[in-house]
Length: 321
Image: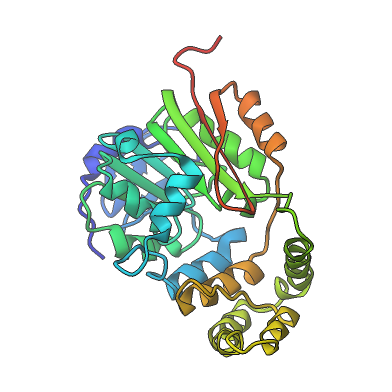
């Protein structure tokens, strides 16, 4: 695994997640100057030794390591990134940016290409290995394995912090969000996107959400390898059945997701993502707005993102009132 970012350039924003002390380069990684804790660096900075509640995502993103990276055939990741953060290239160019929950790097890829001075991605799961394979050769990308509740960064280190589709898979989305805010520099931006508790009008949409939640009662208790097998072999079958009139509706009796307007591998990936995840919470816009207000953020804006998501952006004031 190759990594090009200058580690001397990054230690200025890092701290020991155990004691908060400064870190310095050491043989094979970093060392805390206070408590002498050691953190490995094998192309990914390792600040945790276990995957905990994010275990399924490591398997997911190592299996589907390049599926959602934008390519000539599809640019959905950039479309979604813009709609769920309202960040344009001018907002990140030359800036230090953090993605909380980077997975295999689909959104970090965009930030890097937009010209961020430093694009930092952290994830609790071993998905960081896929992110490093995809992006680690870029000289403005840093990947770390860390717990969002025990982040290894100094306060005010980032001009922009964002998290898309991740906080609702932690033990507390609210606590996770509030752990990110202190990392934003005065005048900086934070944007998050979480699952919506409300659904768009229509019986069909509501029934689909209910169906997914009902299946998850069982599927999230099954072995992840079994669910991966189901996703890889059953979804292509239902993908074919979905093209047959009338018969296509049989798929609603099974835990599969079929996206007609996307490549097959997106349906395979999202079926596993939906039904293997251990933790999932849903939130209302009013609730997320409250989080932002409680952290005394300014210019809070509910973004026009996809159905099923609550996307909110705010700014850290230059000076707290």
